[in-house]
Amino acid sequence: MAQKQLAASFPMLMSEVTVWLSAQILSSLRTEADRQFPLETGGALIGYWSDADTVVVTEFVGPGPDSVHRRYSYQHDHEWEASQIALHYHRSGRSHVYIGDWHTHPEARSGDLSGTDRRSIRRVIKSREARARRPLMVVLFGKTEHWTPLVWVSTLKPRWAWRQQLLIEKTKLQLFSV
Image (tube, rainbow, N blue to C red; front, top):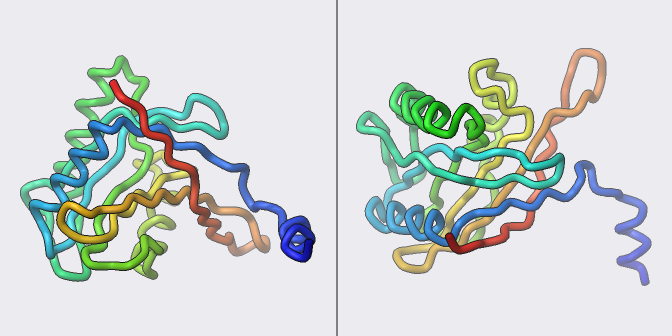
């Protein structure tokens, strides 16, 4: 009873989002995570929002040749990723766009976001080039052959006239087969 009252007094800050991801893409992300273990790796996600609460991941971009993989950090090869995103965008008839990022947390016990992850999300939302007002962040945590995905969705909400608050929430992941 007390939990229900507490939940009612703190409504969700965003509507609940469902993320559809093919089992094949998840398998490819895990393979890339295994390949780079014990270093972090990552890339970009491509897809579309089918409505305000549902996003479909259709492709992923792995790390580019100039990506930097470290034990506790990963730096994207932004130029390479942008070229791959543009390629997928044109191949899809301009309907599949950049929808967020993915990366790994090797040997972590949770997929919680770090401060670096949160700053990265804020930069993506504010970036004109990204055009992602509600980007996803998929974190694979664990170890070789035992990666668990956790999906986050985020947005900026006005807090005061001069400051915006970053809202980040875990969301539901639905797998499908192609």
